[in-house]
Image (cartoon, rainbow, N blue to C red; front, side, top):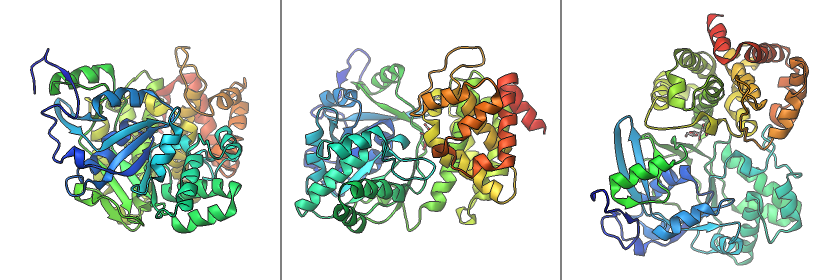
Length: 488
Ligand code: CS2
C-alpha cells in the first residue's frame, strides 16, 4: 500500500498488482455478455482463481448498452479492484481475468468475432432479467419485443441478447467450430432452460435448421449465483484508491459471502471453478428456488416497503424492527415450507441472510433493488404465492410485498414526491394504477397476464388480500400496514 498522494492508475505494467499468475500468458476462453459490478465480483473472481492452473480461460467482456464500462477499464488494462467489506473490516484484491471489454453499441462486429473465436468455449451472461426479451409469466420469448423485431429484420446486426447469441452460433456452425456452453448467471427460474427456450425460440423464427442445431448441440447449464454487489459510488472509488494506492475508475464493492452452484454440462470444457469454491451439481433447481424465494424475495419486499417508509439502504430497512420481523416471518412461515427438504438447515440460511442484509458497509440502495419489479416478482414472490395457495395456505406477507411493488409503481411516495420508477413496464403499470378507485386499478393491473399469469388474477383469496393490502398502503402507509399485518 502506498501513502496517500502517491496514487497511480492501476495498470498491467505497474508493480504491486499481486496477481498469482502471469497475465501475459492468459488467453480468452470465455465471452461474457453484460459486464457489470455483479459479474466482476462473482464469476470473474471464481475464474481469476483458476487462471494459475490453466491460463486459457481469460474473459472477453461486453457491455450491451453502456459505453462507460469500456471507457473506465481500458486505460487500466481491464484490471480492477474487488473490495470485500463487512462492517468495519475490508479486504482488497485485484482481478486480472478480464482481458477486454467491448462496447456492443459501437463494436458489434468485434463482439461477434470474439464470440465466434474457436478459443471461446463458454459464453456467460449477466444481462438482467429483462435482457432475455421474454414474457416473465411464461418464460417464452416475446416475439413482439422491439429488440426482437429489430433482430428478425436485421439478423446480421443484432442488438438483443437472443439475437447476438443466435447470430454467433450460426457463424460458429458455418465455420465448423466446436459446440459450446451458454451459461446464464441471472436470477431467473430454471435459468439454463429459460435461456435455451428464448435462444432456440428466436432461432426458430429465423431458420428451423438452426434452431434444431442449437437445441441439440449447445448446452445451457443452469446456475444459482449469489453475492450482494451494490452499484459502485464515487465514495467507494476514493476509499479504494486510498486503501490500495491505485487509482481505479471502476472498482467493485461486495460482501465476504459468495455462492455459485452450477449444473456440470460443458461440451468444450470449463475452468476448474470448483477449486475456487463453486459447487458442481446435477440439479440446480432446489438451490435456485431457495435463493430466489428466500434472498431475492426478501430483498424485493425490503426494497419496496423500505423505500416507501424512507429507508434508502437495505441495512437500514432490515434494522427496522417491524420490517425485520416481517421478513423473518415471510421466510420462516411462508417460504421455508415450500422448499424441498434436501436443502438442509433453512433456518441457518435465513439467519445468515438477515445478517448479510444487515452489513452496514454495503450501501445497497432500496431503489436499486426496486428496479424492474415486473421482471423480478414472478420468480421472487408470485411463485411462493402460487405454491402456498395451491396447498391451501395463506401468503399474506408475500402478497404485501406485491402490493408494495404496485404502491411503489404508482410513482409517488408517501410524501407526494415523485419516485424514479425504472421498469420496462413502468408506463403500462402507471396507467393501470391511475384509475381513481383502487379496485379498478387492481383489475387493470392484474390483467397484465405477462406478469401475473391468468391463475392469480382469478383466485378470489389472492384478489381480496392484495386489494386489502394495497388500499391500506395507500391510506395508512407502509409502516402502519406492516404493523397491522404483524398484529393479525
Ligand atoms: C437484488 C440482487 O438487485 C436485486 O434485485 O435482489 O441483485 C441480489 O443482490 C443478488 O441476487 C444477490 O445474489
